[in-house]
Length: 337
Image (cartoon, rainbow, N blue to C red; front, side, top):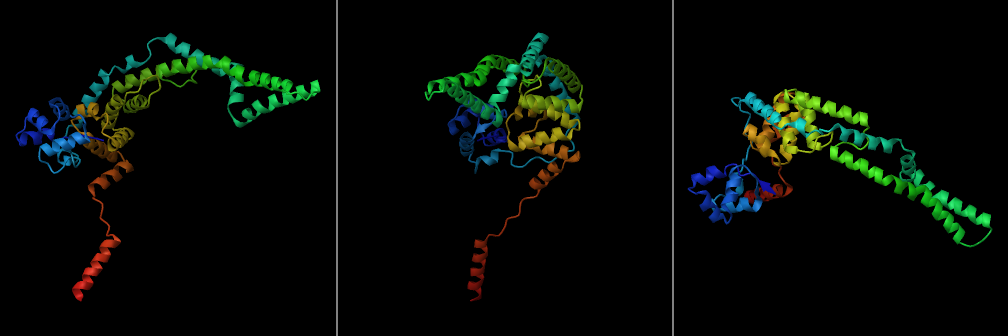
């Protein structure tokens, strides 16, 4: 488990520690203190050591314990400009495959698998209950026929018939088709696309993604979300990059995309991973980012965001357990007697 010690620097200065003296007191390196004060995560044991050296009750005193409420003075427009600038600096178009011949080669490899009879034959006998049964029943039938034709009780004619038929039906198509399938899978993996796309589909996808990136860099919120989801999950010719995906989602959310705001809220509720790239442009920590995204999503009509805000703003009521009730009754009886 890792935590963000948001208030470490302020507490250190207030209690008269330098980075070097605090590092010595906590038994860690000065470099670790420097990294944590820059916003990087600290291991739980490290956080406990630092809080003990600062004479805190626990490490929670150094964390952001409550999300900052939506600040009307905060310049959201400025955030949006920063995020759009960040998107342009990513040079997303350059991450797309630049050589059309690679796209064509991949498409042709996929089409070869789709169209050739050997792959249909292989699929019929290797996938599905019917194919599996046929791959056993046909060789058995052939072996019985050979035994009948030779009119013998010897095992070897049947064994040869079964083995030869099974090899021709199942093993040989597998041996022939496997190299081509692996080639298609390798080429598709290199391009971050599905291995079922044809040459035409791949070229169309490349053109579509290039247009989406151009629109996203111009501030189109729907395109920003599409590009962000492609980066987050991988595929559609873009390699996985969750940090950049969050930054682009942030821009989409600031532009009024509810789904993007919900995605950011869910991400930072679950984890503080990848928050540094996003918060670099907004000045928020992970919990603040989740809250701000929830505020934005709620304003755009998100029921999920409204429920999250209500949950953290209204502390849960403590229920009175049966043990507490019995103790109360016993005390009451004792007082009355």
